[in-house]
Amino acid sequence: MAFNFGAPSGTSGTAAATAAPAVGFGGFGTTSTTAGSAFSFSAPANTGTTGLFGGTQNKGFGFGTGFGTTTGSSTGLGTGLGTGLGFGGFNTQQQQQQTTLGGLFSQPTQAPTQSNQLINTASALSAPTLLGDERDAILAKWNQLQAFWGTGKGYFNNNIPPVEFTQENPFCRFKAVGYSCMPNNKDEDGLVVLVFNKKETDIRSQQQQLVESLHKVLGGNQTLTVNIEGIKTLPDDQTEVVIYVVERSPNGTSRRVPATTLYAHFEQTNIKTQLQQLGVTLSMTRTELSPAQIKQLLQNPPAGVDPIIWEQAKVDNPDSEKLIPVPMVGFKELLRRLKVQDQMTKQHQTRLDIISEDISELQKNQTTTMAKIAQYKRKLMDLSHRTLQVLIKQEIQRKSGYAIQADEEQLRVQLDTIQCELNAPTQFKGRLNELMSQIRMQNHFGAVKSEERYYIDADLLREIKQHLKQQQEGLSHLISIIKDDLEDIKLVEHGLNETIHIRGGVFS
Image 1 (cartoon, rainbow, N blue to C red):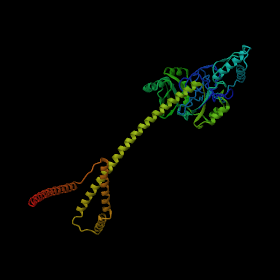
Image 2 (cartoon, rainbow, N blue to C red):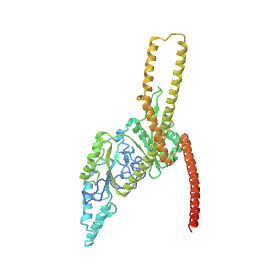
Image 3 (tube, rainbow, N blue to C red):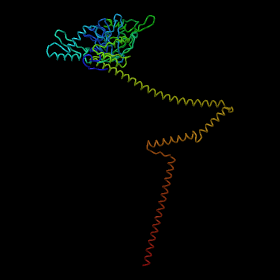
Image 4 (cartoon, rainbow, N blue to C red):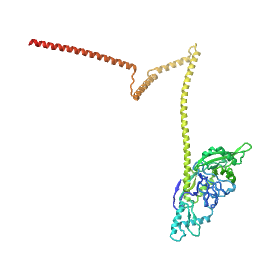
């Protein structure tokens, strides 16, 4: 979506639509205007209530208040935003059929009036003659500012009424192009949208009463059954309810009431009053557009939109099979679409949270199931071994007293061969013992490394203690010998000293 503060006339904006106050969600609101509308089959100068509850029988095809004001009683088109709100209500009653699809994006057919209006607008913007002095230039700039903003009146001549500037004028700068999702429901599906001025929680809590009330609105016919297709929250505390009616025939067959038929019934004055008492602010059909209708809508750019900009909007369409460009005018429309986008983002996040919870629950269930499968496998293996043991004992009892047969002898030889291979030092058993030794060493080193403690075998510890004890006894015995030797040395030394004294006395 591009927002443009474009250049002057002919290039300003990327789409056109009136910025009358929007009521509810795109295409669902109702406003009134006295200005010519670019989005309606009805005449540009008609004044009345827009949307589906118009007061005239000229029900055309156009955007509701979500994309701008429609005159007469044109059927609204919702914004959709890829959420299924999309377009609705293409009235197919025969008395309302027109030879051409002028309305939605076509220019008004009153060429002289439009020509005079363009001349007056040009005079108000370029050469007003209201005051006859230099103040007219200031007035021209003021009129240009009003035209760019899309509001106000442009005075330019004392004898001619002022020009009413609306946001669909070609000089308005606050225009943009968005894309709405086209519905894919057929008229036979019978889907009709009712917009209630109530919260979703209130609608869901009173869903059964709502069905009964709608059944009474349909006359309480026992052959008709009202069904709710879906309930969805809209901005500004509004709720969209999609319904369809099933009609049962006396022979037991049933069919859905076509959407156009059900919508025509809701458009009756007395029925419409009853719906308004229930809180319905808008009703519309949800049916797909034919290729011819889509082509006609795309070929005629909205009023005030440069055809080049409109062609570029069609080229930039991300999915021409599902989306269609729609005009947006003014900040109110931009704010409304922003609210719708926030609402849908919250709904998507809520759905993602639900999916995430479901995935977590499935993962828990998968873990539990895998554990049970492993347990059942172990149980199956145990039962298989027990069954084999029973079969062996049974076979032994059955063969008791019989000589060993040739095939049994052959099996015994094969088993002995296998046993010898397994017990061979360099074969499987030796390798298994080696692997077991390595595993024990790794476990031992791992335990030592993790706990930083040493573990010694009990027998080895006993031998070490015995060896240390013997060493201690040897050291004690050696110490006693050294002590005895020291005593002897002392005696020898004492004897030598005495001999020396004796000899000294003799010689003296």
